[in-house]
Image (tube, rainbow, N blue to C red; front, side, top):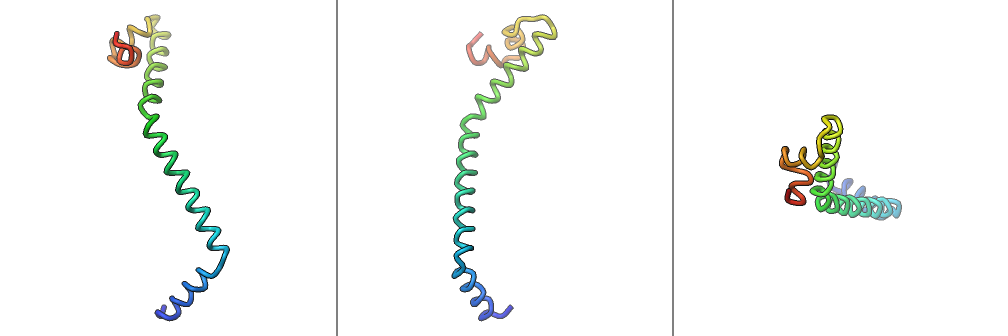
Length: 84
C-alpha cells in the first residue's frame, strides 16, 4: 500500500466516531483486566491456603484422622497458619 493511501486510511479511521467508542471500550476492558490481575495476585496466598485446609479436611475424613494432625504431617494448612 502506498504511503499516501495509508495516511488517508488512517485519517478516515480517526475521523470515525465509532472507532473512538471502540477504543474507549478497549481501554475500560484493559483497566478491569489489570484490576483483576492485581486482586488475584494479592488473594493468591489466601486462596491456596484455603484449598490446602479443605484438602487436609477431606483426607482426615477419609482416614478418620484429626485435620490438624494431617496438616502437621504435611507441614501446611492449619499448622503453617496457626503454628501447631
